[in-house]
Image (tube, rainbow, N blue to C red; front, side, top):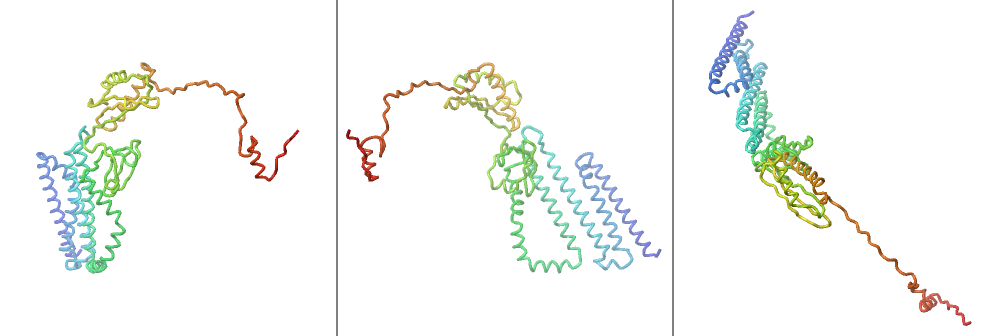
Amino acid sequence: MSDPWIDFLLTLGGAVVIGVVIVAVVAIFIRLTARRFPTAGALNRSARLPFRTLLLVIAIWASIRSSLPGGTTNDSWDPLNLLCRIVAIIASAWLVAAVALFLEDLSLRRYRVDVADNRIARRARTQVLVIRRLTLMVIVVLAVGAILLSFPGAGAIGASVLASAGVISIVAALAAQSTLGNVIAGIQIAFSDSIRYDDAVIVEGEWGWVEEITLSYVVVRLWDDRRMVLPSTYFTTTPFQNWTRNHSELLGSVEFDLDWRVSPDGMRTELDRILPLTDLWDGRVKVLQVTDAVNGFVHIRILVTARDAPTLFDLRCYVRERMIDWLQSSNEGGLPRFRVEAVERAAPSSGSRTEPTGLYSGDVAAEQRASEVTGQTPVTDNT
């Protein structure tokens, strides 16, 4: 083996040893720091692999440029140099993305969504997750741009692209109008606080929870575990109901059409008895009123409150079931009924009926008119 190759291997080995020493020093520093700040240990676990990869690539690249035989030092577009540059750009983007995602996850840990009042936490989660996608998109775009600029002739290509940028920008704007609109709508949703993760919403006549918010679409998990995927522009251009916009507590109604013999006071007493027996009711509102009494029925409405939408649905079913049991056992007269009254009418007498008269029959005048029309003279009997 020639001396230049031995020098290259020695240089490469030395660079690798220096990289290992740097990794060891950083690891010891982070381990000592983690005793006081546990987040330092979590950052080490997230960024350890991309950091070591970047150091290894830099060590190899430095060895190649400094001592590899073949004149690669002066050739900036040598394939090995180009490969090392691309790998270094990828490793750098990986490291930056890992640190950014760690910081975003760290901010999410400050907000808990498994508590009763989690409105602020859901808003923060929505904004951080949208920022996460924007961050990754920007990092990927910058990394791809840096890689493309690393190839020879990229400047000439860029000049030719800029020369036709006017036409291309118009075509791209027309082609990506809906996509850009959804991206802008996704950013607007994240920071306008119109919807958040786990919000209870009604969209397209369906009830569900917001499960995922991206830059282009929103996924709503419906009550029967179906998923409705809607473009982000839907929530900026179409009216929808958000049941947890300011708080999760809701007011719901249970309605009955009953007979006039029902006892509203008895139903009210039964309502006062059954609500404290369940944890579904939050104790804020309980109202029973007769809201209408027409067409043979008495319309009774019961208003109750619960801490969130799923609990309210179960509470309404509970109140409806208990009231049906009470009506069947204690107030059967209040069960809805349809009444039919049988009316007897006397038949009209047939002796007083007379033959109907018409225009051309039934009496003498009618027959005279008929003869004038037909030109015939009626035959009369003079005997």
